Image (cartoon, rainbow, N blue to C red; front, side, top):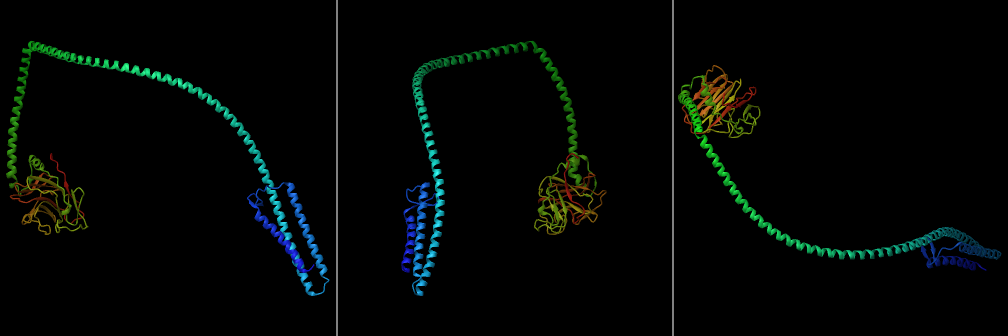
Length: 482
């Protein structure tokens, strides 16, 4: 036996193992249970099968050892042959054979371990399968019993259903008979009701007719009875009643005569007062143009009855003035409002929203103890960009300036007042061409512009001057009874 023969034997052994492994891979199917490679239809082996497989494995293992011994013997026989080249070849062959044997042994041990693991897993699966088969048998037995019981119950229910169907059939027949009887009864009842309704309508008509006749008779009877009573009362009480009425009329006539006498006297008094007031209104103011004095109570009330609701127009206010929201107060302030052609530019004044072009009008201004102010009226044509406060330029004002009272005549006229006013009354009679000023606290006349022939609108106007410490000018409410 030479070295080539030994190599052939080793290659044969290796090829045999590889073919066995490939045959298993090609001819078997993979099972998910335990990752075992088995043939189709293969079932896990029993304990006796595992022992047989173990024996076959041992035989193969022993055969491999025998082959190894044979190879070793051949090596030893060849070792005495001459030539160092053969010895080297034999050494290489021994080394290769030894490594191949060790590799095969390792693979065999791995296969044995895998086989043991798969056998344990297969044993567990066999036990689980047996348990499931037992459970299936028990379930089949219980299901069979339940099916039998249900079949018996179903037969009973069928019998009961047949009985109920027969009973229902009888009830349906009875129901049908009752329905027929009900229809007949409804038809007879309907006919009876229709007949009774016709009779009832006839009776109602007859009753209405009788009621109307009775009502007319009752009304006629009541009327006759009332006429009889009235006639009896008039007949018995006619004379006494007329006497009483005559006495009452006489008393009423006496009362009326006394009232008429008083009214006649009051009429004469009022006529005298009216003539006196007319005289004062027409001539008195002209006489008092430059005179001061107490105004009579009647005249004072007559003037104040012309009170107007004056509201200041902030659009016309000088840029340094502040107007209250209700338009009743104006104050000098340091701020500047936006410029406008409607505003007074050189005169710290403001005019009212409402103008007057006829009739009598009156308003009051609370000036307090301030040292500078102007109150009165301005004409619609007044030039607001110039500072010439005279009657010719359209200003009819009562003025306090530098502790001097004056009016805006042309030229201005100074006044000497007995008592400084805290509240100034301003009066205009447009039709008579007159503007007057009053001290409200003392009810006294200050000054009057007279003899004007107004032809344009007049606006109430006030000037607070450029004083931030004097407080506001206030349009005061006017009491008509004061």
